[in-house]
Image 1 (cartoon, rainbow, N blue to C red):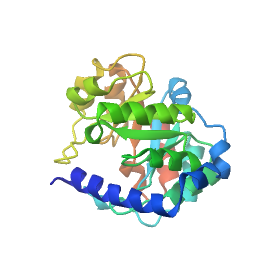
Image 2: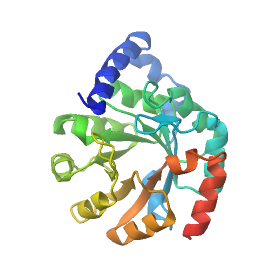
Image 3: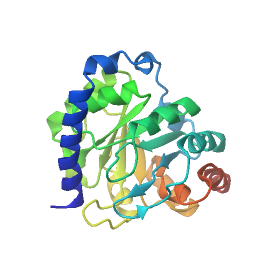
Image 4: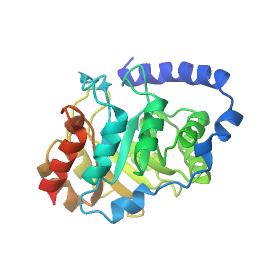
Length: 260
């Protein structure tokens, strides 16, 4: 069993437990459930940099990245740096995140927030809305075409945008549908953890122009972005590069300054 299978197995148990503790009716009564969402796609279309900065404490591939940074400060710093949006890891067991991180980020900035999570149930989409997200992530490799359709259509009905993550042509072809907003190419092979920007380059011409193209993982310098922009990428998800420093916001600001 690879790490992705393990995560999904654990996630099913976790979601079952959460559903037994907090009914959907309670999520729907959340103060944030009625808020107007902020569009990440609009921010990306109107940006010269396209940076989506991530809050991530640890990961299965890198173990501890940074346990010391406060989410409130990170979100504040990212907003001051001029990023287009913020990705918040909410998985606890493997990434050290939580839904409270999403809540804190929402309280501290007006950036579009992506709930970075292994979504395998509609309940998690309601959670995303209730905790202040603007965008959800759907990972093609762990979902069927029917699930992607059902989840993305539910998200759209809640005014949430949808980022679909793919790793190869097969995942792209099974997943393309009108209820998606952005397609993200993950340059990291989740089975081997190897990273290559060639994945983004190869898949760029196959992604229909109706969708905003985002490149994820392995973007650690300005050169990588300049290399990918000619392939039509308007968004770049960067996590470890900022989070491994003592001040993620300051690091993002310096990065953007060098990029412009």
